[in-house]
Length: 105
Image (cartoon, rainbow, N blue to C red; front, side, top):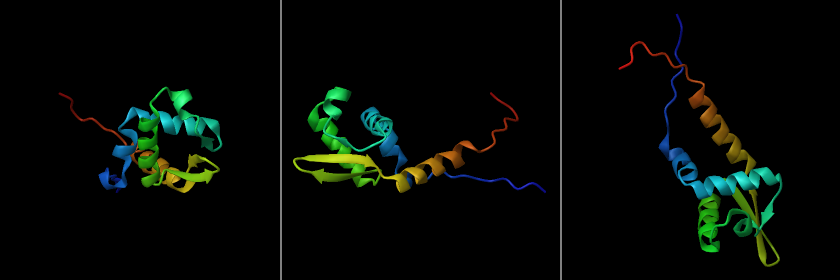
């Protein structure tokens, strides 16, 4: 007898707010591509207003996806690796589900 692995989208996990806004995705992608912490160069690189970037960084930090440290007058941000691995696992489980269509409309 074959057992079916079920996966439930858990909106309390917090992925909707993270990936639901293109600015947050762009910020995360930029930080990931740098492979190091970034310090105050997002405005020039992303072309978004400082206030917009600050708000999204605040949200990403609140969600635990990035961490920030104060370095003089600037704040440096990097990906929080443990949380990032949790998100990867979450989506891996979701996309590993087998899709079988018996009949389509």
